[in-house]
Amino acid sequence: MKKFGSLLLAGTLALALAGCGDSNSAGSTDNAAASGSSNGAASKPVEITYWYSWGDKIAENNENLVKMFNESQDEVIVKAEYQGSYADQHSKAQAAFAAGNAPEVWQNEIASVGVFAESGMTQELSSFVEKDQLDMDDFIPGLMGNSYVNDKLYALPYLRSTPILYLNRTMLEEAGLDPAGPQNWAEFEDYARKLTIKDQRYGISMPVDIWFYEAFVRQSGGTMISEDGKSAAFNNETGIEPVKLWLKMKDEGIMSIGTTDDAGTQAKTDFHNQRSAMLFASTADLTNNMKVAEEQGFELGTTFMPANDTFGVPTGGANLVMTSGLSPEKQEAAWKFIKWMTSKEQTIYASSFTGYLPSRISAVESDEMKKLYEEKPLFKVAVDQLEYAGPRPMQKVYPEIGEMIKDEILRAVVDSSVTAEAAIAEAAKKADALLSK
Image 1 (cartoon, one colour):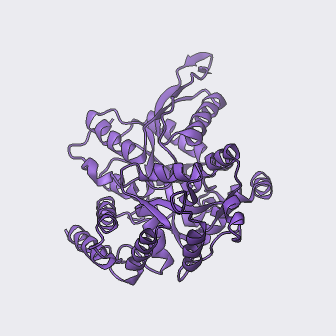
Image 2 (cartoon, one colour; image 1 turned 30 degrees about the horizontal axis):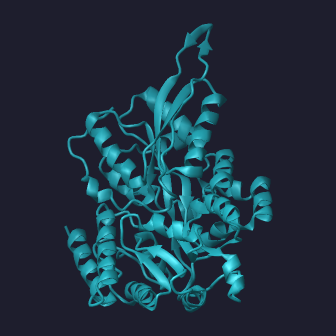
Image 3 (tube, helix red, strand yellow; image 1 turned 180 degrees about the vertical axis):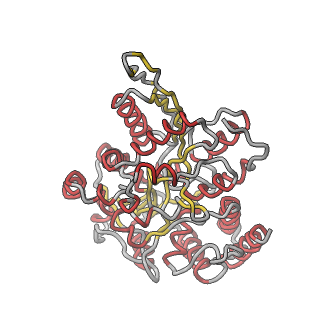
């Protein structure tokens, strides 16, 4: 493997948390495929390593697919290895590159695809696509924005997501609210107020999460970074109004905003234990939330994130990438695995198993997915919401900018003297300094 003299600082990628479930530990798969033969002589299969993130149903999905791939052919053996969160995986990938033992295939959180590509750590894939005449038009266009870097293809959509609003429909009905859920910010605030029972439950628990902030900015008609990529674009009403809404709801006691490192996990725990009635989370959490709701005895609902000027969400999740500098033999093995994992059949399996978005048009239009959407309409909400979805920024410094935004919003959450305007202005000032370098 190729060893690089200079690598990204691990902190640059600390933001890459969006679009996934809890990072519970998971095992690894190392299934030996049968040896193939050529002209009667045994040939040894090529062994490669695949890194993935997140536990629970997401880990099961990855392990199951790798097992299926290994059993489907005898030319490549894939060893699946769990690496924690996206941020954990990215940090480990950097260390592995430095040591010369990076995995051949791994999950790259979409906002960091550009970071790794521009640093020479991932392989450009156009030649493989052209050789196999892969139908790129079958990938859902709204999920392709974070696959290209400088007009070159570096990643293929795999486990992709958007944030959606989860609802405890049992609580909504008891409160006399439409179980379909709030459609706009005003209704969202009203729902949270009517669902709150002092000292018992909040209308909603949520972390300060850059992915959710991006969604609220998009709902207000804004963007995070200027079109030329040289300055922050959120230091205006589109970036300030979301924070003002959150602070207002927090101060009224109808929204719990976590301030600890495990705030995201705590928000999910509150929802699961019925200490909150609503939850912003990835569509990737769907099957796990359905299981918990059944165990806890409440009806689960899902709906679009509420609109302001419009509906709007960023996409999230991970694309599959190939390590650069592999031998031709390893490249072919890695590509065979990536192509198989992102095919129509595996897309249908992964989406049905986890709730992640199907990344191929042919999968959405398949009889299997149509039947699933008819039987379990909760799965279709995120697919329908794709109409209002867009890519995440991929500037090399954006992960660091995201952390700055998060820190400034948290400062306003814990210090009532810090206004939304002041927090966003400071975050934009710091972002501009990074983008201008």
